[in-house]
Image 1 (cartoon, rainbow, N blue to C red):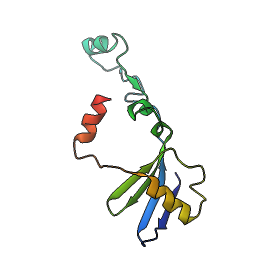
Image 2: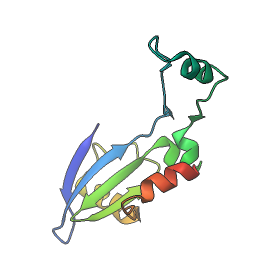
Image 3: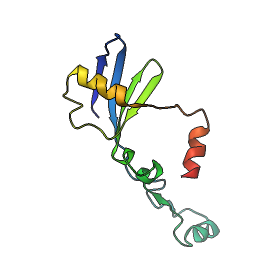
Length: 120
């Protein structure tokens, strides 16, 4: 994971990193064990219960599925998608411009994340 920090024109210190989501499967392996009770094991063997979801689809489809830059400072967080190709090597002035272009990201309240995941 790449990481940078910079000071903007107002002297505020920002941290920047790339977030690249991947596909996921909540249960990536078969949990049917040899020690399971016969009734439980049989119930688990009835069809495929796994739901494979693509994190990209859960994020809305355009832009963020390929990742975003996260800018953070003192409780403020911003996101910029797609990730600019030169962000790891550009000068601080350009990095600050990217930060200004980024949208403010609202933090999820406790319990809200699980509710959002169940809707996806």
